[in-house]
Image (cartoon, rainbow, N blue to C red; front, side, top):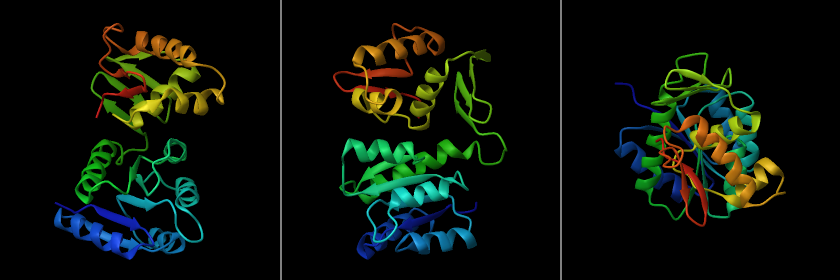
Length: 227
C-alpha cells in the first residue's frame, strides 16, 4: 500500500524534526520546508497528500501561502499555530484550511487529525466532482447539490454555505460570534443564527427536535457530528 506524503512547512526546525519522527513512525513519507518559497518549490515538483502549515513564518505567512495554494489545488491543509485566537481559526478555515491546530497539541494528536482529514478527503480525490459523503447526507461541492436520503434538497444560498462550512470541518465548534462574522458581517445576534440553523435542520435532520448532525454546544455555538 502506497504511503501518504506529508509536507510540513515550519521555520522552527525542532518542531519540523519532531513531527517528522512521529509521521514517519506512523508510516508517512515526510517532506519539509522552512518557508513559503521552499514549500511552493516542493509543490511544483512533487505531489503531496496533505500539508501541515505553520501560520507565523518569516516572509510570506501561512495564511498568504494557503491562499496561493488554494488558487491551484484542493490538497488538504492543516494550520499549525502558536495562537489560539478564534479570529485566526476562522480566518484559516475561511481561506480553505481543513483544520486549525494549536501548537500545544501533542504530536500524536496532530498525526491523528491529519489522518482524519485524509479519511474525509479520500473519497473525492479520484473524481472531477468533489463530494462530501456523511451517510444519509451527501454534498456535491461542484454542483452545490445537497442530497438527503437519496433526495435532492433545496437550500437557500445562506443555508448551503452554512452547511458546507460545518460538513467540511466535522466536530469543530463554531461560535455564534464566528458565524455572525463570516456570514452576516458581524451584524445580528444569536437569534439570527438559531433561525437559520433551525431551518437547515428541518431540511436535513430526520428529527429536527433531536438533531444528530447539527448539534448545539451549549453556551458556545454549534458543531457538525459527521466525522
